[in-house]
Image (cartoon, rainbow, N blue to C red; front, top):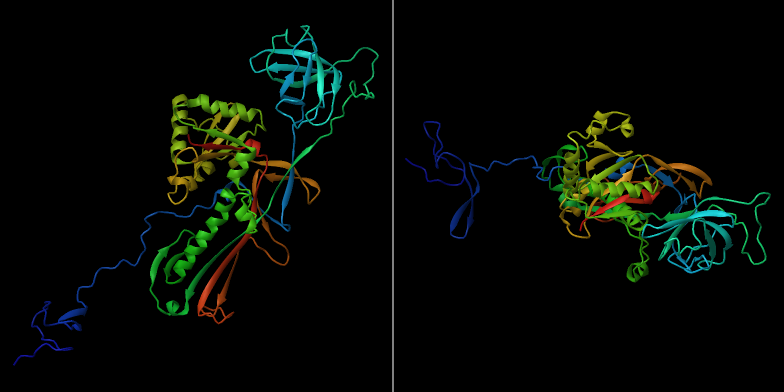
Length: 480
């Protein structure tokens, strides 16, 4: 007697072998054919998520180079020192017999503060120079002052070989025996000018950064587990919270990216929308710092030495950090390899507690050039294809040089001089609310009972801005 195969029926076999007739089948009718709903041979499913992009997070740069400090205002204001010595560039001499140098050239907004009796060096753009004694000075209004500079070794500035616009800087003074420091006359042509120190004031405003993740109540009840090992150290099995975890990681990246890329709003549309913007690092360096275009290995050490010469004219910070994209980092390696077989051996690692091992563990390699120490590392933000890694051409940013250590500035709120890292983050916080990094649940699912929304909403918020002090010591590397 034989049995026809029906739902739930089997034909047993005398040996342990797999036949069409000796295992249960669950079938469903689709058209004229029977289709297997469950199969004996199921596909092999990997529970673990494959990390095909490695570590996808981009944050960490600002934590590495700066600090985070609270503030309570809508604006952070700081003042930076101006130069100590008196110098003017782009001035226009009245060539001939008058020896008058007028402050009506390129710096049309500056005021003459060179006093009678000062000794100055006058030089042009062609290598000629002459030292002069200032016999008369008219402070005047902005762009209208002038000095009369009598050459020590020639009758006139023109006969001394100068031409075109000139640079003038004060190197001392000279007075006759028995003289006193001159006072202003009625015409202000022979007076001594008291130079009051002037601060250059800068400010930045925080922006509010927000994000949200939403999962509805029905999807929360449909569990699908995935084994993960996320960039923030979370590992194990997650279901809908897998997406929440990635939203949090993305938001933490936004906290840094917003301060690196931020721009102050000036466009009519965004201003009308009452969006203020904030000055990011790239904008601050472009506006107040140094921009190097087209650094390549082919340019060699001469191109890099030109950067050092420019740093000499600025703050000359001894220790600096280089955060570079891949090609620029290779260009530096090729440049250093061409002049030295081992460029890390002679570097002082003061920034890393004099520990070369600590520097290497943080991904830095160091080299010394002239009186400067440089610590070089890759910056993933400039390599990642989802950010600036896919950009090439004149607008591409290929690296940044950041001075290490701290600088002293005058804090307008505290009313005192303070020491701060050159690059640091300020976030809004008070005793009532800390807005450095807030997260909270709303809705009616997942433990939240704040509304009749059949979902769980995970909210993220931060309010912060970046302070770039002494941007004249920063260098932004850009492509050709």
